[in-house]
Image 1 (cartoon, rainbow, N blue to C red):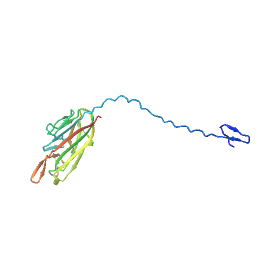
Image 2 (cartoon, rainbow, N blue to C red):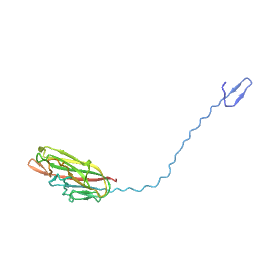
Image 3 (cartoon, helix red, strand yellow):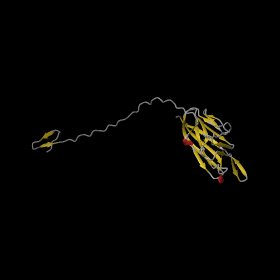
Image 4 (cartoon, rainbow, N blue to C red):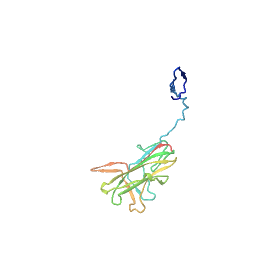
Length: 205
């Protein structure tokens, strides 16, 4: 017979081995008691900063390097907005604090003849073109009016100045881009905006 670690009980006739099964260990339920909450952190602050300016008259932008600056004649009139210390003029928007900003622009150009069928624009920051903001198109004269826009997110520093400028290659035979403030309906004209520029602060940098 096999060995057994438990006690042996003798009998007159034979030895009987009695093995008692080992008791299973009971699982202990561990209760985790959370500690006291820590002190609250300092409250964050975010100041809204945004602006919208537009122009409601015809204007012509020339090829003069690095490009003519678009005009926004309604920058200080109802309909234009400047909030959070942002500074707007008839040609620019200057941001008061650093951060990531959504920048959106739109123009409406007039294809008057074969030499005025193309248009391209981009946003400049402190006089430097931001490639992510560029956009352009070519239209047929029969379409007459073309709407062109662009958007991007730019990381700006306090005091940065944004302008919208025309982009015409120096070697191009086209010398300017006419922007229009009218859509011609049969028998009547509908006033529209020739250009607009929007800047909205999304978050601190």
